[in-house]
Image (cartoon, rainbow, N blue to C red; front, side):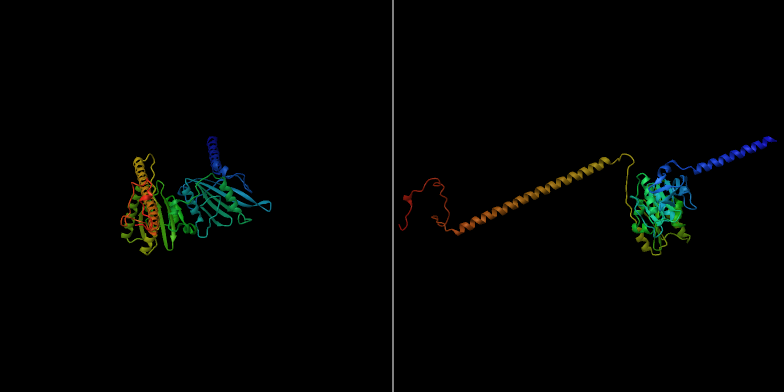
Length: 393
């Protein structure tokens, strides 16, 4: 009778140990977080240990924003010499800077009125209100939230700057897709949504028709923003083949919606590797104008050696040498023309001056007014006996 009891007790202890082990593993912070969240950050002092955090937005999965890991730690700021004001710092490690920016926009930091602040070069920064700051630096997303009433409006910013300084150098620029939006600077201030997954796109843009036909694989990213009553969605595919296949699927889905009389995008167009949607715009001309404002810059890169490298170098060399020869010919021709012009001016001036001097003097001529060249007697003195004196016949 004791055997079943002992077996039950061992099973209970094993389950309890497993639960405690899972809880300890859950509470244990990742190694990289201890470096980013040390005991002191500027004037702020840690009030507890580093723990793991659930960084995904509400009702979202971590893979929707390519979240690898997350940690948080509580810090306290000195208020009147005592550490009284508490802040919670959350650091999230994502797969890329685009994923970190997607998480930034999903956290409500793209709402109208959110400002951007300078955190030592971090550009993708939003400040929701006093006591809450979030920014992106490389693949890291960081948020600083006041747990108690802040002692000053800049405490959260100071703590955020200290955290940003502990993060190794990474890109602080906005994703290129955001910069290609029409009036992108104003839209970033007003609020945009960025997505690196299909679920994140539906969360940012809403359950819009035809978006379910957009495949998110191989690095596809999307951005959405509102322009009046219109919702603009731009999806970027990694290769032209991806864009071609997706365009065929999306066009077929839109045609099915229109044939069935169901809601469809106001306008759709493929622009390079982009698929551009406009929803809610009744004016077709305005929708076309909005799509035409999307910038697409083609950037072709070879993974290995460019097979057309020699051809490109030959064409570049030919163009360079042709330019050199043309410049040389033009320079030589201009120099010749300049020399001829200067010579003509100087020669003409001398000639005209001598003619004027000759016209002022009355010269004697025994050749009927003609000029006689006395070449034979040029070097011999003229005998005075042969000259006719004045008044003599």
